[in-house]
Amino acid sequence: MTQGHEAGFWADEEARLLDPGRAHVIRDSKTPSGPVPIGHLRGPIISDSIVRTLRARGVDVRFVYTVDDYDPMDAASMRLQAGYAEHMGKPLFAIPSPDPSVASDFAEYHASRYIALFASLGVTPEFHRMRDLYRSGALDKAIDLVLRNAEIIRGIHAQVANVQHAPGWLPISVICERCGRIGTTLATAYDGSTVAYHCSPDYVEWAEGCGNKGRTSPFKGGSKLLWNEQWCAMWDHFGVTYEEGGKDLLTAGGSRDRSNEIYRAVWKKEPPLGLAHEFFNLGGKKMSTSKGVGATAVELVRIYPPEITRFLMLRTHPKRHVEFDPAGPTLPRLVDDYDRAAEAYVSEPESDLGKIWRLSQVSADPEPPGFRVRLSLLADWLQIPSIVPEREAEARKGSPLTAAELRELHRRLELAKVWLERWAPEEAKFSVAPSLPAAAADLTSAQRAFLGKVRDEIGRITDPEAMHARLYEIAKEVGLQRDGRVTQEGFAAIYIALLGTRHGPRAAWLIVALDPELVRRRFDEAAGDPVKV
Image (cartoon, rainbow, N blue to C red; front, side, top):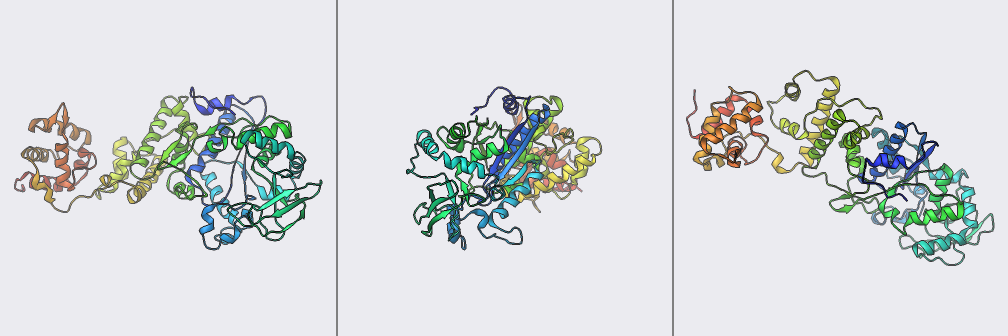
């Protein structure tokens, strides 16, 4: 297993490990056991980025993604859901769909929704469902090889992971001919064409077998290899040369180490290279499909632009964990970081940050980034009815927006709306008070003097930067400046008079954006002066 490198861009470091003079196969997989947490997109996006990096170097590379729909239903959360307890232990493809109008079975329902996200994210592997591979007989040779080497495999499980199996145990699960379960069967006694099995009532904790005993053929879909052995079979079947994975699978003595040794001992081949990526945590908790922890990939990708989703996965080195919580200021900060990466791409395309921006795009050959407005500023604009975002954006750019820039503006406006509705902290939300707020009665004499002087500039200064500079001058004149900076009391006076709060958007921009007559009248009232006619 490779451990990755901190020096240089991680995707380049991984690509350098692979011989550029031969074709390569990169693989990833997912068990469709329920709604997929957003963090589970980290693996496919990392793999896709390595594929793109290799192709940019002229390397012939194939990207394979398997859907493990032959796995048994073992998710603890499903036992509590009405109608699913009776299906525990059955193959995922044999369980009824939550919505038959969407998909024919449980596995396809969740797999199809997850796979649909890939194209929108620019991730385009070959998809292979395990039901097709098993039923077609494509894995029969691997099943026979594993069964004939079961004693060696039992020894590796004991040596590498200290997992002891009873004599005669076979590393496959057959489908019970009576109840259709695959997770409750213990297979023994391979005779070259059939195996004996017992569908045991107490073989596993999460499902109850029917007690049936018999012999059956393990071929043509009659069984599935257990996890470690199936992993090896996939490497051999597709000729995999690189496969990254989550830290939980790739720790010392874990699943990957077992599979590596089995591949060497049984298949007589060296296992693929691949790094271990750290967890993607939601509020400090690892996201999990089976435990129902984490925002679903379907929900977040529906809201987040695909480039932002890819950037979220790629900006942190795979060997470092990602702490993610969509609440609060997370999204505006993420978009700001993305924009800094875009600027790096323009100025220095081969910088690490520039490469991350390029790999964050849906297209492998993206157009240079255009003019963009910060998401937090767009959220402010949305809360002031007098603002026309398109007009304001063009004023900031200094020229008309291109069609692409206009599309990006509208997309960010929609994103800002969702953020304000669902995740924005209270201090980011504001509205202009219909009349002078009661809090204005507590303004100090210095604050009143400050507002009186600012009132005289309303309508005369229309540029936000010029107004910002003038606010500093006025603050100094009335004693609300300290160490060359306007004290919080100065800006608080503006926010209290207009919004009724002590915080708000950038003060200079706010007073320039609002109707001049409204601002003058409000500041007159707050300063204690009569309204000038």
